[in-house]
Structure formats: structure tokens, C-alpha cells
Image (tube, rainbow, N blue to C red; front, side, top):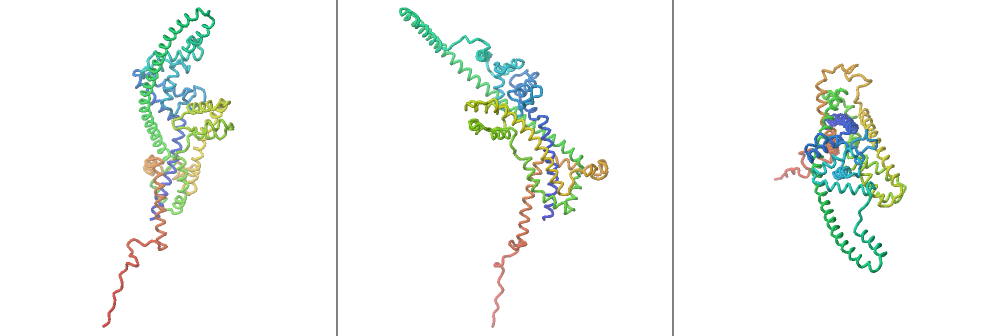
Length: 458
């Protein structure tokens, strides 16, 4: 029984090790080509097309510009090489559209399209014009000529004090009538502000619904792409490493030394697989923790003590959250702290790639200790002095290996863990039987044995 389980464990372990190498390769490819960002942009393009029919020709370029802009991009390099954001929230994208449309973010080439999209969500053009005018006044682009009713009252009161006493009463009557009219206008303006707020909320709800639908599609596309990459790498590894399923199974079933060595390494391989396939902290989470640990300003440390990086956070959104908390705590050197955070994020991203390469070496080393050569020795083929020798006799075995490897590392990880747990229970049962703590199945209990028949004497 144990020999059969050990044979299965040894075979599954080899499949798992190769599958982990494939997983690492897929992760590197996905990060290098920014597959999440590409699919996110594709989903956002679909959102824009839904909001504004007929926008198809410009939607893709506009979505890429939004995701690679400084408001959302994960990258700190200059714009030409800026990577698309890999995860965003709907409120971030909606806020970016509103900033661009109203001029708070000065991107003239995107402003018209941003306005068109917001109008497609139901925001009136006049509302966007008013918001843009307020931005111009706030930034000083347009002189401030309007005042509030309270400011006018204060200015009128100051002027009234310089008038002769006999004219003050008449002036007060005029000012009172004017103030009443201004109060009425202010009430109307407040109502309009409420209407504008309601319009913004309604527009955001529409955008949020369409955004979430498209992002579900984007996640499906990303999963599909990584699946195809896994299949492609399974074929490449099966033929490159010349892995013949039939030959491997014969080896682990007939060579007890190799089989025992593979079983002995199963615990280490499970630990490595758990690190590679488990939920490891994201780059932003690691960077935030490192940055927070290096803070020397106690006030800043307290301000960001409860800050966390959500899975949907980007570099920009995390910076914005931290900046708000630092300002609220009246921290003085905010710019220096945010620069240090950027450096921590860059360092964490590089460390993530370095860990992937190290995991590749560790997984290969685990298998080398077993006596099974994952890579052909001395650059030669597995069945001869060159890679092509013995290729065709083992062709279908390698095809079968590619099919098994395409099942993915999680499948083989769960299979190995289940088999290892089963082996432990079987070994315990066998040991108990040998020590007499457990009877063989069907053996009668000693106290249940029938008593010997009594003899009678006459």
C-alpha cells in the first residue's frame, strides 16, 4: 500500500515542481507585459463605448491615456514609458474624468472626450461649465468678481458708517431690500447646488454599474490569457525538458532510491508551492509596511498607523490617502515622506521580481536533491548526446506530459497535499497494527471468544 502511495507521490511531486516553474514563468510574463493593465484598459474601453455609443474609434486611446496618466498609473517614470494601472476603483476613474473635464487636471487633449463621456452619463453641459469656471477662479486664472451675501453685507455696513446720519436710514432701507433679493438668489443657488449634487451622484451610479460589469469581463480575459500562457509553457517545458510521462512513471515505480528521495522532499516542495501559490502580500502592501517601519517622525507614524493597501489600490490612490492623513496630522515634511514612499514602492517591485527568480532556483534545487534530473545533464539530451536523439519514440509521452502540466500548479499542489496526508494516516495505521494497538479487520475480540463447552461426569 505504501509503495503504491509513494509512487503516486513521487510522480505528482515531479509534475508539481515543473508546474511551479511554469507558474513563475507566467507570473513574470504577466508582469513584464502588464497583462492586468492591458485587460483593465480593454474593460474600461468597453465601459466608455457603453456610455457613449459611437465613441469606439477614440475609446481605446482615451482609456489608455486615463490609466497611464499620473492620477492612476502605478509607474513613476515619465509618460512615454508609463505603465497602465493594474487595478482601479470606479470612483478613481470617475474623479479623473471630472478633473480633466473641469480643468482641475490640465490635459487639453483629453478634455473634450472627458466632457462628452460625463454628458453621456447625464451631467448637463452647464453644470460642467460652472464647475470649470469655479476652478478657474480658484486657481487665479480668472479674477474673482463675485462675493457672497455675507461679504456684501459686511462691505455695505462698512460703507454705511461713512455716510451722514440723515442718509444712513435711507441707505439701510435700500440695502435691506437688496439683501432680501440676494438672499433669495442664494437660496436658489443652494437649490441648484443640491440638484448638481444629485446629478453627480446619479451619473456616478450609472458609471459604477457599467464599470463593474466591464471589470468582471476584464478579470475573465486576464484569467483566459494566463490560462493560454500556462498551456503554451506546458508544451514548451514538456519538450524542452524532454519529460515523458510513461518513462517518469516507470522510473518512480521501479527505482526505490529515487522514489524514497522524492517522497522525502515532498514536505519542502509543499512549503515552496505554498509560498508561490499562496496569497503573498502585494507590492504596495510590502512597500507601505517598509516605509512605515522607517518613519522617524512620531506624528507621521501615528497618522498612518491604520493605513492599509487594498487589492484595488494604485500607487496614486495610496499616495493620496496617505497625503490626506499626513495633512490632517499637520506633518511638515510631507513631500519628503511621499518621495520616500515612491522609492519604497519601486524597491518592492524590484524585490518581487528578484524573489521570483530565487523561487525558480529553490524549486529546481529541491528536485536535484532527489536524484531526478529536471534538466538534461551537461546540455545533452535525456536519451542521447543531442536533444533530437530519441525524440520520436518519446513524442506521445511528452504530449501527454504537456497535457498533465496544463492542469496547472494548484491542481498538482492539492493532489500532493492530499496524498501526503493520506500516506501519513496509512503509515500510522500500519504502525499501530504492528504494535498490536489495532487488530486486523475481522479479528474477534478476546472477550467475545466463545467459552469452551463444560464437561459433565456421570
